[in-house]
Length: 294
Image 1 (spheres, helix red, strand yellow):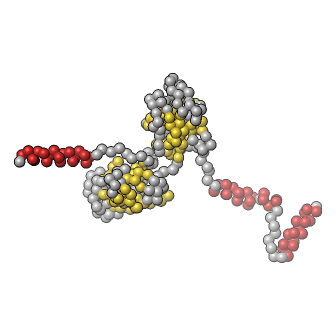
Image 2 (cartoon, rainbow, N blue to C red):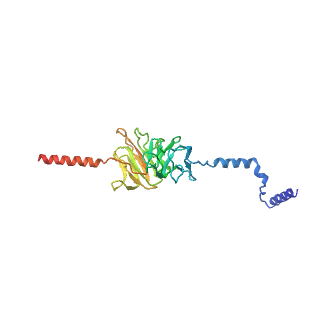
Image 3 (cartoon, helix red, strand yellow):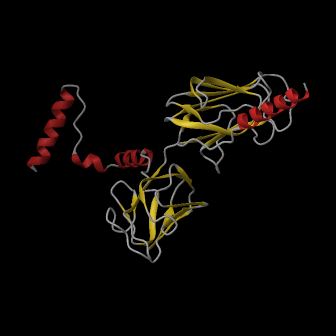
């Protein structure tokens, strides 16, 4: 009773002074308080777990969510296998990869790795399985792979009708690709990290419709190039974090076949054929022929 009288006196004093009575412990269990707590919980986003789950084998997951070969960093044993499920889209990179070439192998969808060549920002899809196998003569230091949700494209900065295809999240493409893009289009997106950008497909109306990278960076020829148009798209173009990529199509109707483009980022330069060597060889040959006729 002393406690009840004390609370009553406190509330009476608060009313006399024009103040709001202090909340009591019982008030925390009111329906209004419960509803507020539920709303707060609903507004808190769920935290995703590790994107890789071991479903078979002696491989292990460390505190950072990375997967390591059995007994890592010591050598794994012969005739071991691991199956690792991919729980969400992302990229996988090996921070350490040391196996016997051709004997201990890891496969990620259609990609296979062995020796000292491990995955590096290799795309992985939800529902895929990473498989590791060592044969009966294979014992090496092993490997450690880490998955990342990070993308070189800063999705939060993307504006306009250009799209990032679900099947190729490392790429950004013109509207309606591989069909014709439209007129009076503008798209922008920023890079979230340093990377290399190439265009497996590029065909726009020359000068009128273009891709522009700001700030520009040195391409493989050593020239500072930041605008691409016609049939010349970026090729192993080094871009820095926070660089802005702009697509612009003017108001003229596109009257060329298969107009459109696709830009894809990669951590490593993509091997390309050197057409300039072939063309220069043809020029030298034609010069020799002309001289022989004189």
